[in-house]
Image 1 (spheres, rainbow, N blue to C red):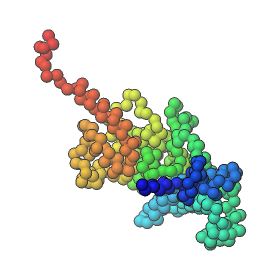
Image 2 (tube, helix red, strand yellow; image 1 turned 180 degrees about the vertical axis):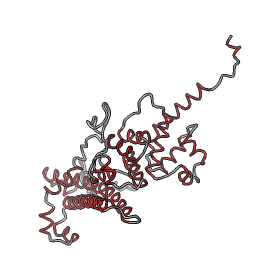
Image 3 (spheres, one colour; image 1 turned 60 degrees about the vertical axis):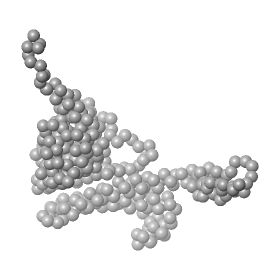
Image 4 (tube, rainbow, N blue to C red; image 1 turned 180 degrees about the horizontal axis):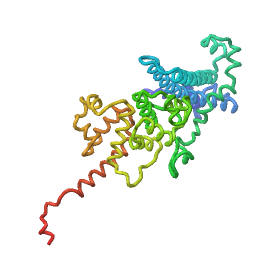
Length: 356
């Protein structure tokens, strides 16, 4: 009878494959020789390094998203009709700040990987002593402070906020771990697209809402939290109906619409806000979806009279860079409301004399 070879095993701490052990009584070793000889202090240090690496990678993802947004804004401002000097310098400054975060997160990650100062210095074309002095713990903590405590995070939206209307006005979060598809990012994109189409400079908008141009840039980039009063000021200056931005804001902030809200109209306002965020018109959206969704269904979703099924709205969410999970609750409320309205408004087939 053939003897089945033992299944391969790995160290439960570091994952290193374990060598097959000779047959013997007792439980086989669960850790490799290195892990068995580590002290508790060494294990704690390795766990801290692992958490630091994970944190730095999260920061890199968030900061590179910010870099991409500022770089795209700079390209838009520098080509075609050149933007005013103030707008260009503001965008450059925001881009430099985001790159500083990327650089700091990369150096902190290198230290958690136990790479030497000389190795890091070679890639930055500076001396090892320069890296040691510039990227000390105090500097890294200061630069990465807005992204700290990723393992015990605070709620994404604060429970209350003093800048909003009474009762329910959390602020939108900073642009961390953003995927460009969240409602908060779609809201900022809607404001940015509308501002560019209006040919209004950041300085002109800042003066109209009584803010500094750099503050406006940080609001639109996600570096500063966006409150509803800010959104309302942008809407007033740029000539946007507040009702088109309110659903995006509420979805981002986790606010339920008031009970008296018409769910069907609310869903269509949400779609209209997404159209603003993408720079689409109903016509261009219909052309973009022509191969997957019939133009009649697109028009009905945007203007009524009915509410198309979820398959149509899921395609709309993808085309408008929205998360289906954000749109589905709105569609469900609108769909149920439309079905209930259809039932109550359907005339009875019985004549009046049947009721006496």
